[in-house]
Every structure is written in structure tokens, then in C-alpha cells.
Image 1: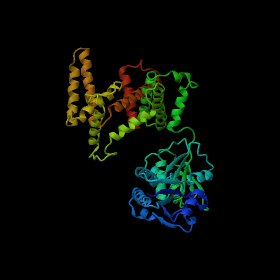
Image 2: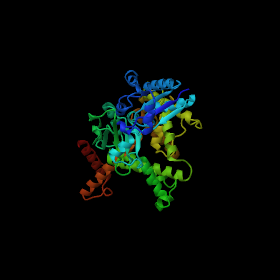
Image 3: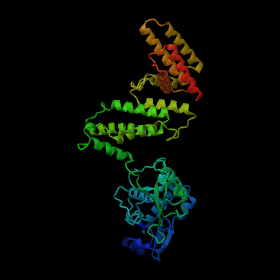
Length: 482
């Protein structure tokens, strides 16, 4: 049985070849190159017979097929008595997917492997940027980043994105990064590092894919954002607040003591949405996120669970409940998505025995009514049309009018409110939002009535009901006119 020798060719010019790599290449008769499109190839020992896998990049449908074909052929050659020398750009274990597969399959076969290390693109790029890799540097592959919808990068730390080999790929990378970084965030392109043609160019993120020099030796540097902007940074801030050298008030808090604030912040988020105030929404979402991180930090300290488990649970739940996105299930419309969601939820919550289980008791009553009615409707317990719901509202109204005694009146009025919430659902209106907006309109109009009463030298308490009603109607008419 032969030997598989994998040689790293370094990042650029032949002078970056290690002595060990040169000795291996000088002592063999042939070398198989992943690609000849690398500056070091021109400086290889002249006696070498060179073969390459460049033709696979032109004929295969995707990179997975290219790597599979390379692995199959290299392993076949390695089984020969003389073995094979397979050479790759840079370091064999930096950005070389085929090498990972070769190592795994060679281990399964018991095939001897020798890895001859080479300088990767990372080290000379650090030199070009005057950057310390131990300062939290993240290293990512451009193809993987381009395939993501949100970058798996901590924005508080610097990042190198390797193998940005074309402008179309750079465009996809840009779109992913713009889901987290500002459009004008300065990024740096390092072209042809460790060669005489090396060039370093800084551009705003939105112009990343407009650079004509982008090629197979291009690396992207993404500097960190200013301040603390990443989730991990926020977790560290909260953990510091809870630490012995942190804040005495924060250290005293428990799950229960934070409950009221959590509810308050959730309602402030809703208020900002209702008012269309985006600045307030941004602030209130931060306040709400603080409560989530704070609760998880308390749980971490008590040995109950950690934030990583919270995130893992919700991520697994989302993927399980969307088999039409992360699976081969086909759905016709949103109605089928909702029905499947409810069925999957029941499968997950085996301790629940009713469709009505799992509705939070702390929900506002009107919103709770909406949730209950929607759950019933998803399993077919519903009116066939909105006219049936309207008739039910009229029926409940008549029962309120006929009620005798406070207990019966309360019961019938509750049924009427539940029917109205159902009717709102049928009309495509969120009952909770509608009532909150009505509350705001009432408060705004009443304040205006008070102002106009004061302008008349009176107060609302001193005016007769007829005068108040007239002022009320004036306010409504003026609102309509504006």
C-alpha cells in the first residue's frame, strides 16, 4: 500500500514554500495539483510531471462534485505502491474541503497519510493589514458566507473572509454582510497577497462587488463595528452587572422580581409599533432583549439552563415546525402552514391533551379570546362565514339586554366580548390592536375636550353633559377634516 502525501504550496510566490515541502517535491517524480492557477506552481522543481484537477471545475455542476471527484482519484492514486503527492495552495487544512474528506476516508481505509504544512493566506494577510490574529480574529469561507441569510459573525470582532474569487461571489457576500453591517461600513480587499502584485484597497461595503481586481487570490477583511453590538458582548455586560463586582441592585434580582418589568417592556414594544415610532421601537426592543438576556443569566448562575440552550431550543423548534423550508414537505397556502404548525406543536407538547392548552394565562383578556378562537378555528370549530359571527354578536347582545342580576350580566357580557373578538378575526382585524387604538383615540379626544373647555373658562366637571357632547362632536369633526 502506498502513501498519501498532501503538500501545502504556501500563499503566493515560490519563496514561501517551506524547506520540507521543497524537499518532498524535489524527491518525487510527479505531483497532482488541485489547481495550476497559483503563483507557486511556476517555481516548482522543473523535473516534476504536473497534473491538475482544473478541468473538473469546468465540467462539474458544483464544488461538491469537484471535491468528490478529486477525493476519489487521489485515493486511487494513493493506493499505488508509489503512492501520490497531492499539492494544494496555502496550508492543506485552511480552506481545502477535499483535504478534510481525504483525511477522513484515508483513516477509514488505514491508508498512511503525511501532511506537509504550508504557510496559509492568513499570515501574509495579517502582515498586509498589520493585524493581530489573537485579537478575536474570525476566519470564514466566502462561499459559506454567501450561502447564509445572516452572517455567522460576531460584529464586535474582526473577520477575514477567504477565497472571494469573483465579483458575483463578492455580491452575494455583500448582501449577507449587509444584513448586519451598515451599507457604508469600510471593508478592505487584499488582492494577490504574498505576490509582487499584492494590493490593499478599502471601500464601503456597498461597493464591495464593484472592484474589477477581484480574483482567485482575493481576501476580504471586515473590521468590527464600533462599541458593543454583538449578542455575546451584551451577554458579557449583563453577566458583569450580576457579578460580585457588578451592581448591587442587579445582583438581587430573580426570575420573579423581573417579571413585571418584562411584561411592561413587551407592552412598550407594542405601543411603539402601534404608534409607528421606529426610534422608540428600536429602543424598546433593546429593553425587551435585556430582559431575555437577564433571565438567561440568572438561570445560568443558578445552574438551571444557559442562553445557548435557549437559542438551541428555539432554533430546533423553528426548523421542526417549518418542514416546507428545511425539508421536502410541500404546502399549498398559509392556511396549510398554520394547520401543520398546530399539529407539530401538539406532537412536541405530548403533555398537552387539548387544543386549548398552552395559552398563557397572563395574556390580556381580549388577546386571549382571539388566541382561543383561532385555535378552535384551526381544527374546524368555526362559523362558515362572517355573517354567522355577526348573527352571534347580535344574539349575545340580546342576551346581555335580557340578563337579570350582576352575575348573569357579567357572564353574558363576557360572551358578547368573546363573540366580538371572533368577529374581528373574521374581518381580518386584530381585536387587541383595534381596542388599543380606540383607547388612544378616546384619550386624545378627551384631552382636546378638556383643552377646549379651559379655553371657554370652564372645566369638564362644570359643563353639562350636552355641552360636553357638543365639544366631543366638534373634536371628531375637526379630526375628520384634518
